[in-house]
Amino acid sequence: MLALRTLLTAAALLLIVCATPLFGQGLPITITKAFNPDMVTVGGSATTTMTVTITNPNSFQVTGINFSDTYPAGLVPDQVGAYTCGTLGSSAAFNASGWSFTNVTLSAGGSCSVPMLMHAMTLGVITNTTSQVTGTGVPAGGPASADLNVVAAITPTLSEWMLLAFAVSIAVIAALRLT
Image (cartoon, rainbow, N blue to C red; front, side):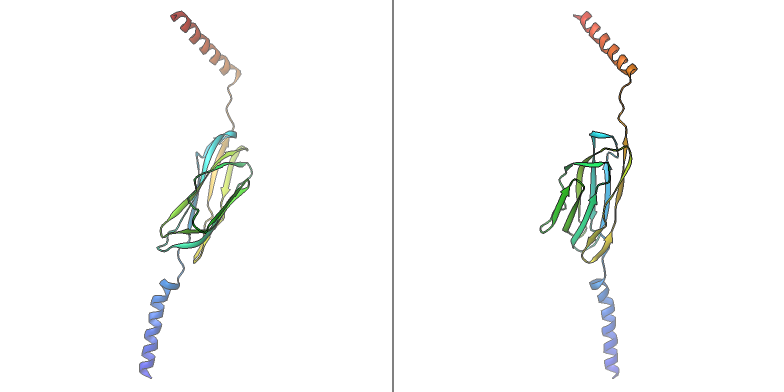
């Protein structure tokens, strides 16, 4: 009986020591977001690149990764950049209101990014926040946020235009005198 109890105790200790790494949950996938530049003028002529990056901090591959981004009012997409989150079996959807990735796989320590060229149609600070990022066997991570500062376009006043016209006139007169 004592031998059986000793054997069961040893088996229980072995299970406790080995089960944690085998059945324990990994770290959450991290998600970051940034605008570059983080200040633009209002309207379609000044653009910024919004980049979302996800990273697997674990020492094992994570599958089934899902994340998305919905654009706030005033932020307009222009062009999808060369994203690196598309893996075999994953899918990506892009539209005027946002984008999503499903079933992405990241290797141990791996990362991928989604760049998007955008412009702003409203003045002020536009805050854009992603969804959480989820994956199989790891807790949810994120969300991530970034601010875009949108300022009014500066147009020359009449006196600035007059100064510019005067400078051009002087340059033309000087050029004529040289000939």
